[in-house]
Length: 327
Image (cartoon, rainbow, N blue to C red; front, side, top):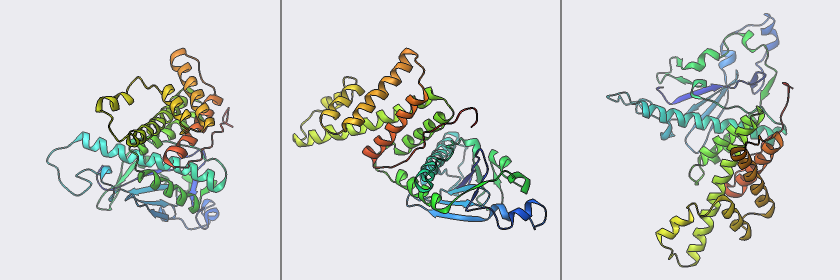
């Protein structure tokens, strides 16, 4: 990886255009209209977010992210320096950040479809092999993903839908909210929600319920820390370091913390009940081998939505319905 721009191709069950199919597409497909590759690569949407990333969308269904203003996604090579030795750990770190940002955008796209167009969109997740990278000179692209990019009209013959500019704008705003959030680890939690949602739709309910609960517990811990810090401040801030460490220790289990937050009114009663139910479902699977059902997984997903809204102020609608037998 060298350069600041990485991208991915939106590969769904059915191919999608960005901002509608190209003008004269029916004629192109029947060989009656002029064809050039620029029909695919035309930039039809762009959005610069406050977090320092510029996102653009090409007609064919590719999204490109320019990380020039997002230092954690860059290596010395990307920034134009010439390091004396290859640093694999540095490359791995920067790649992981780019993949995480794009997976957060994937979840944001899903949520944007739900909120803007009132229907679910197929969730997806990306790995480093799904990314391509533009050379800093502007000449050429590299990466495994280039093998899957459409090159001829026949490569898009199944295209039957489009992602609207309104959906992409909403997704970019949601991504910016995640990346700009003051709570540490917010990006990682959103990526984990996306992984859980993908697992849920693929009927991996054991995987989804573990990931959903992990997010719930992490968010509950944030509420807990905020709560006890407020109590310490109200008492004059005289709590010792050892006692503070105990508050974060094993004596205060997820169950006990939930009860305290519920009694204190930090957790609304329905949400408190949902957290307890989800924790029990997760424990029955991990410690008792009881395989969770799609209903169990869906309940956990609903709880995650409420916890994100309460703890981080992030509203991410999720379509938790699933299909069977490919329907």
